[in-house]
Image (cartoon, rainbow, N blue to C red; front, top):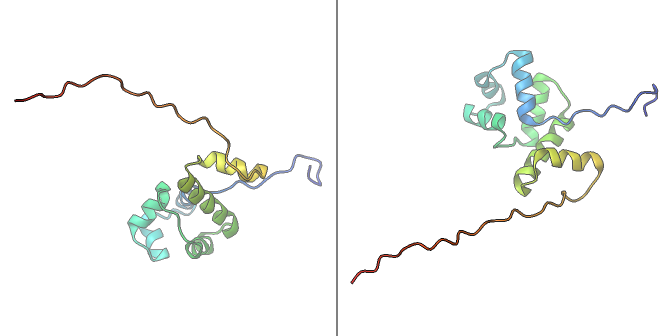
Amino acid sequence: MSAGGGPERRPPIVTVPAYLAAVERLHGVGPAEMARALRVSRSVVRRWRQGTLVPSWRRVRAMTALWGGDAALLALGAALQRFSRTTGVPLGDAVRMVRTGRRAAPVRAPAVRVRDRRQLPLPMGG
């Protein structure tokens, strides 16, 4: 509970794609302008927006200096993206791990692979 008596409100964990989408929506900055302002190529900005590439700490600070926001919070989102890509843990589960203080990912049953037992005819030549 917070001092006001209501439930404690945790700040949302912001990932880089969500941040860049908000920047585009709030400031009207497109990918080309983002790339120019951050001195990177448009393809890098596109990959950041898709979540396939995570910017460095220096780039995260530059983003928040230009368009506002909390650099530490955005860096946490970027670190969770990196963790998720490296370990294969879904991003939502990684966020839950941080919020609950768990040190390990949720245990999931391994996917059962069905073996194909059909026999393929092999060419027998002579």
